[in-house]
Image (cartoon, rainbow, N blue to C red):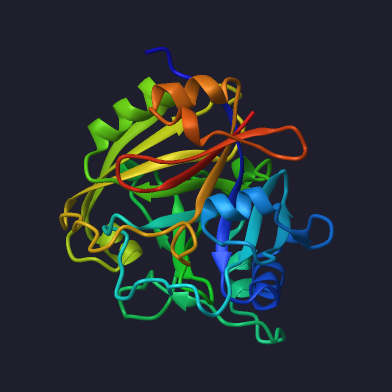
Length: 306
């Protein structure tokens, strides 16, 4: 089986309950900008996702060169599961890269915005919301994890290094991370089926990781995977050894709030569909683009576009 090369991650598509509320949150608290006007999702795609024949409103936002798509699933969509941690297989976060995390953290909690406040995941040793610096053995980054109004996890991420080294860092979406039941098995799937390559592989643990994840004594394998273009964002696999990732009780539907979709550009969507045994699920949009909606072995959604 020859992998179908993935040239880049185009965007992350995220279901929300209220489009206006979520748009305000990402703009006011994280600095995203609208990428054009809101629009109605193409009917063929909406039907494939399971939304039926109703109109689905969509707003695309940009941060730097990267794009986030908010899809209004509506108040009847199944809500984000709670309780939920980064070790759960449904977990998928979006990491926002920033030059100065202290400034980004203050903006996130700014008092002059009417938009919804974030819900903190990461805590300082005294229990208050705060960024956490990981040791050099875990990459040396400084990060803060939190949730948006619908429960989706996000992360502020400041790369390692002094202020001078970080002065060239541009704001944007650094990566999306998904929890997997087996890091080595998932790594093989992404290499063999999608042609992604490993750019980093490390094991994170210790008290700092516990504060970041709000977990007790976590041990997690972190694998960074890159597309052929090597552009951001990239994909990270999180394989928790401790705590063990629980099996999902009910596999999420594409219309559930928890169900992000990683939208990828693929040079051969037909070949990918054949490799995955899904040749009959190919859809041609009115734009002429060929698309395929599929899941990885742990149920995370991808939308391939040629």
